[in-house]
Length: 169
Image (tube, rainbow, N blue to C red):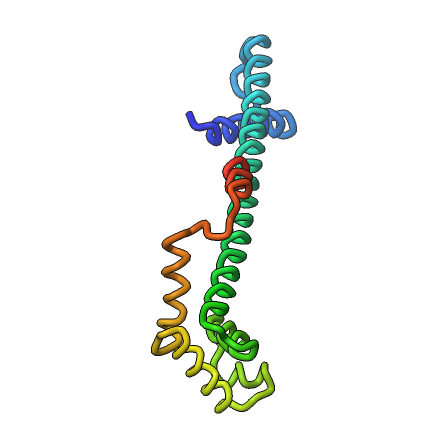
């Protein structure tokens, strides 16, 4: 019997016992020893269910923390890859900003608004970025970074960080 069903049955037994006393509903009497054993079994079932639930909850919390840590490391690795490529392409500070906003999915108008420049300036900067990166547009630019991260999923992550994540999960 799964532990959840045992816990449910134990709770029902104790509830029936209490409601039976309150409402005056009684079934055929059983020997006191068996009645006490049934109550002890019900309590043990509830305690076991609580202990297993707590253990599963703690495991789930640890896995969540490990996943969050992995995501944090992946974000850091992605930013490291971005900056390396920006250095390789010799992007200007303005082009770096535009490239980052473009990779984040912002439109030309949104980038112009954030940078307080005209859309024409942003278009010229994106064209310079694409030319320096050797791509034809935003999708190809983004795919360069995705391909690099997929080829080395733990780029920029130290072995100590990997071991810490493995221990947490």
